[in-house]
Image 1 (spheres, rainbow, N blue to C red):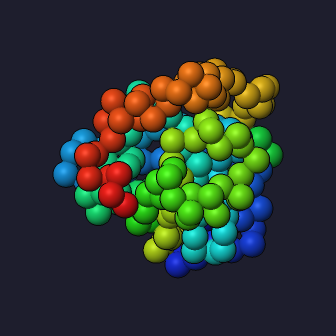
Image 2: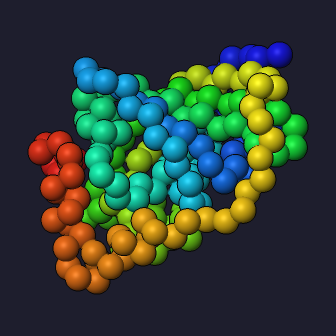
Length: 176
């Protein structure tokens, strides 16, 4: 059966660390944004704080919604082993690449930080679990490396920052 509580448990943290795929949803005054995320891009700092390395993509709606004090939900579900769904309801903060905070938060990740657009810090205000018995069993095969390769090539070419600016970054976000 499902439950709702304020912070992550040890069991929740272990569960999050095992997942190869999760979903991030955000909303503010615009449409609800929902995106799948892979890679080793989520870090549990403590039972109420998560960090996420944000690779570039076609848009930047999560950052837009955070800038507008929107809501964030992270959803993790088991595709292997015992069924489970875990939701983290959060408020977010964008840590920009050209800051000392980015360098500090970057130590949480094994990624080449040249491929990261920025880092999100999520403060959890509620955690919710549900059974997940309707989720199919699927096996993880491998990671796709296309986004990482593309981002690193942009960084090498010196066009990474221009790409970030051209793809839906709120104009006032660079002031954060």
